[in-house]
Length: 149
Image 1 (cartoon, helix red, strand yellow):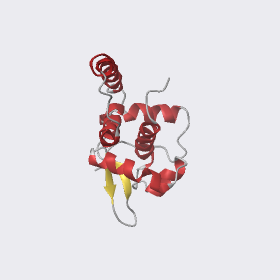
Image 2: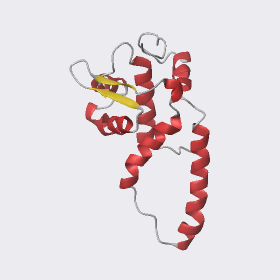
Image 3: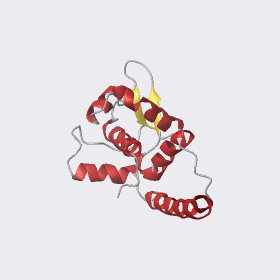
Image 4: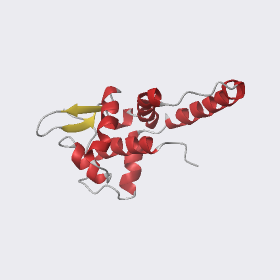
């Protein structure tokens, strides 16, 4: 059973890809989309949501692109998901007015969702990057130190 949407998976994948490939230059949206096997326009709103949440920095210009707004060990999987969920909450369908849903089902699901996100607070982008590196899924240069001077 998968609890995350495709958009959530793509957001995590995008942040991890940028964490791995953003040194020494930012990751172009076009290159990111190619690695994720998506059309470039498909990622624009997702990347902008992550910039607004201060997870990514967008850099303009011919050598622009995206890089992490802070160290990868300081970004949790839950933070990425919250950024995406807050953007899509305006598009969500309203809950039915049924008392069974509003007084029983919704609180149970809310509690379970909170527990799920709390568990993801312990998983950092650095943890996911290390796992990708262990599995040799990083087809770029080895990632260097996670800081800039």
